[in-house]
Structure formats: structure tokens, C-alpha cells
Length: 257
Length: 257
Image 1 (cartoon, rainbow over the protein chains, first blue to last red):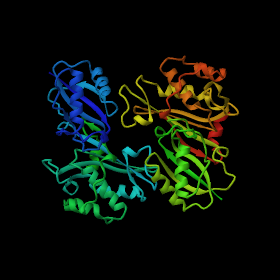
Image 2: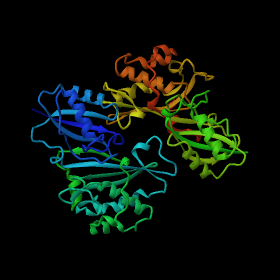
Image 3: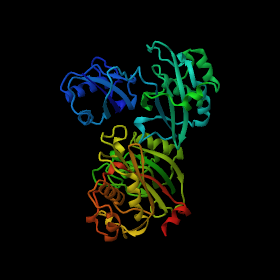
């Protein structure tokens, strides 16, 4: 058996999330079907670096599968991308040692959340941003987000359906930056609880628009109580950008003290 | 009568270009309809800074119209954006002196052309980029594009249906820059002939992929012969970014010698 690692990009609005579910079109099930055609054998189950929720996009999701007699790697890249008709593309494919697991072996990954912050609705970016008409102060939100950097129990930002073994995760970096009307919130961490990034973003926005107190962020973190946090930001503003298997860079670790 | 200037953003894939045409959905006709509803009177004809072709996007098209008793400007912004259902948004509205014309009075404007340059098709950016699987050398294309800067007869890059009075235009700046797999070609000029930017981009790409000689660009410009130039790049990679009515900045003029 050959073990193959793919990097895939997909438009989350085309799928009911990563995870296979009966009678729903999910990334996992559609990708298994396409790989089975291209490899001419039943492929699955696939493993992924993270199970993105329904509607969440990915630019650098990492997926592995086994095949007894796979075609050339370039044929996998082109064949699967062709079969998935603009909804998913394979960016790269490579052989990988047998024991590699895209989720367990990842050291850190980045999610980006995008907000279009202007009175008018988003047009060209509408599928990939959350529209927020009330002005947000990105520099202020950046400052109040910094208390999340470190290793913490993130139960305050955990979805009730989350089945992770532990609520303790490490955030290495979080930034909130405005370019014109677009605000990008970039979070780099060891891993994330279900809806953790969307709950952090929703809480930042609720503080920014005055629905929560300006000093609420450290209190919610310390409380470990999801009910104190803000709204869950909608999924289509979120994108899994990349997953790394390299050692965490020194400059990220330096901020963890 | 009040004279009002709008900045509008639209997704070109929803329209058969700017210009009103019988039985076709165009930006001009749809925007006239929406403005007529919001202003409660027949609005038109609209004037625009540039007549974008079918499929071409705009982030900063400038449009003017007259209304005898317009509602508050914010109601125009919100009302039109609401009626145009994610296909067009009014970014801003302001009263403007009677004699202002968005096309004739503009001093310079920027178009950006985007190319997704990788083996895999575009997914998240697919509506807004031209996919080109063969690797292009952006730095090389940047260098060969520089001969276009200046005031020239651009007949070599003019569509046969172009009805501009003169083929002489000024390009103040052109840059070709790669960020990851995305190549952005930004052109700032006094104005552009029909399909001029798309013909320049197509010629650059044809040189980049070896369909035209490496020294073809100055020769095509000098020849004034459209048949020597490359393909016309597809419209959906092009976007009208902004239109300026301010004096042309010194640093742009300095490059025109």
C-alpha cells in the first residue's frame, strides 16, 4: 500500500463540512468518491488535519489516504481537481511515510477570519467574508485579543457539541488587521476546539460593537463558561489557511511566556 | 435638479457589461431601475467613468445621475444595495457640481488583472482570476511591460470595435507582481481603449508562455497592428479598481519622460 498526502483547497459553501454524514454532500465523501475514480479502487476512510464545519473554507487542508496501485501523482492532482468541478482542487500530492497522520502530527496551523466592515454589503468578496456595517476598531480588537495568546483552557469558546479530549490548547499568535474595508483576524495555534475560532471572532465583534464590555475577553477566558462569550461568527468568513508539520518557529514560542 | 455621484462595486459575471442594450441585463439598466425605485422618479441616463465590458468587475466605478427630489444619500446607498441583491453595492454617494462628468473629468484610473498561476484550478478566487497552469515569470513580465509606460498610440492593443476618437493614451504605471500563486497586473493610465488592458495582459501571457517572442512587446506597440499582439485575456480576471479626479501624482508623472 502507498500512503499519499494531499493539500486541498475547497469552497466550504459547496459542502456540509468535512465529516462524512448520511445523505449529505461533505468534503470527505466527495473526495473519497473522486479519489476512488482516479485510483480505480475503493479509497477511504480519508484522514484530515482538521474537520472543518459546514460552510468553512480551506486553502490548505491536509488529507491522507492509502492506495494499492495509485496512478502518477500529477494524475491525482489533475484528475481529482477535474472531477470536483471548481468546488475543490488538489494543490499538491506526495508519498508520505506510513505512520504519518495529518491531524496528530501537525505542530501548528493557521485559520483566517475575514470581515467586510463598511455600510455597503460585500460584493466581490461576499462568499468569503462576514459583513458588519457598524465600524470596528481593528487596532483595539487586536489589543484585547492578545490575552488569548498562550496555553489555556478554552472552554469559554468551545461549542457544546465539541468532543475533543481536552479543552486546553495553545494559541501562538492572533492578529487583527484592517486593509481598507477588510478586517482579517489570523489565528495560529496548536489546534482548535469545535467553533473556537468563530466564537473568539464573534466575541471580539460583540466587544467591538458594544454588546459586551471592553474588558470581557480575559474574564470569559478565565470563566471557562461559553454562555458568557459572544455570538458564533458565521462559517463562511472562516478559512483554514495552512497546516504545518515543522517545529514551531522560535519567534512564535517566544511570545508564549 | 440635484446631481449625485456614486462609487459602485459590482460582480461583472452578473451583467452583460456596463452599457445599456436591448433585452440584456446590464449594469447601467439595472442601476437605472434600482435608482428609479429609490428616488421615486425615472432616473437616467446614467454616466460612468468607464464602460466595462461584459464580465469585467468593478470595485470603484464612478456613476452620476440627476434627481429632482432625491432621498437622503444614505438611503440611496442602502436602498440600491438592497435592491441589487449582492450583484452591485453603492459604496458611497455625494452631491456633486452640475458640470462634473465621471468620464471626461477623470485624470487617471487603475485596472487590475489577476492570474492564478498554478497547475490546479482556482477555487476560492475562481470568479475573479484567469487560470494559467504553465509557470509565468512575473519579474520578467514586469520588465517587458515597462516599454508601455508613456504616451503612445495603442492601436496594437485596441479592439476592432473600439470607437474611441483617438488611440493615443497615457500609461503612468504598470506592474506585474506575484504573491504565492496569484499574479496581479496593475495598470494606471489616463484612460483605456476597448479591451486594451485585456490585450496587453494576453500579450504578456503569450510572451511568458513562449507563443510570442521575448522582444515582441515594443514591436507590437510600434507596429500599431492588433493582429501582431497576443490573445485577449478573458474578462473575469479584470477589475476596475478606482478612478481619480485629483491631479496625477508627481511620482507617476516623473516616469513619463
